[in-house]
Image (cartoon, rainbow, N blue to C red; front, side):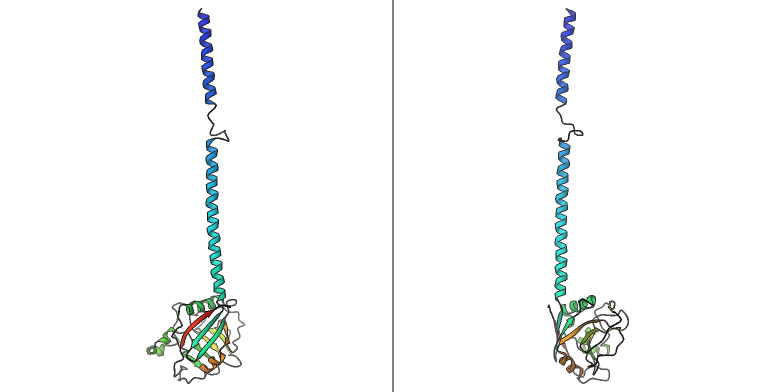
Length: 238
C-alpha cells in the first residue's frame, strides 16, 4: 500500500513539473528569440534614426539650394547704372576676375552708400574719382579723398592689369587698402599706371558723360569747382 502511494505521488510531481516547464518555455527569450519584443524595439529605433537622418538631409538640401540661389542672384547683378548730375554711366562689373571687389561695390551700391557722394577728384586726360562718403559734407572738403566704408580689403591683381579708357578700378593708398573709392579712366590711350589697382569693371555706355565730367573746371587740388553729384546707383542683371 505504501509503495502504491509513493508511486502515485511521484507521478503527480513529474506531471506538475513538466507542466511548469512547458509554460515557462512559452515566454519569449529577450536575448535568443529573434521575433521577441527587444528586437522589435531595435527595429523601431532604427526606423526613427532613419527618419531623423532623412529630415536632416532634406534640411541640408534646402540650405544648399538657398545658398546656390543666392549666389545665382548675386551673379545676375552684372551692371550698375551710375546716375550723376551730368548724366548716366553704365558699367559692367567683373564678378569673374574680381569677385570680392565687384561684390563690395555692388553691396555698397545696394545699401545706398554712394547716394549723394561726389566725384571729388577729376584730372583731365586721366581719370575721374569718386566713392568717398566724406564728399557728402561740404564742410569736410579738406578731407575729401580720405574716407571709406570703415574697413579695408585685399587687392585682386594679376600683375597684368591694363587701364584702358572706360576701365573701372579701385583707388587705394597702398597695397590691400581698398574700401569704397573708385575711378574711371578717361584717357583716350589709357592710363599709364602700374598694375596696382584692382580692375573690377568697365564702362559700356555713357563714356561721353565720363568725358564731360573730366572736362569740368577744377581747383588746384583737382576738386571740381561745381559739384558733380552721384544721385544713386541702380543695379541690374544681364
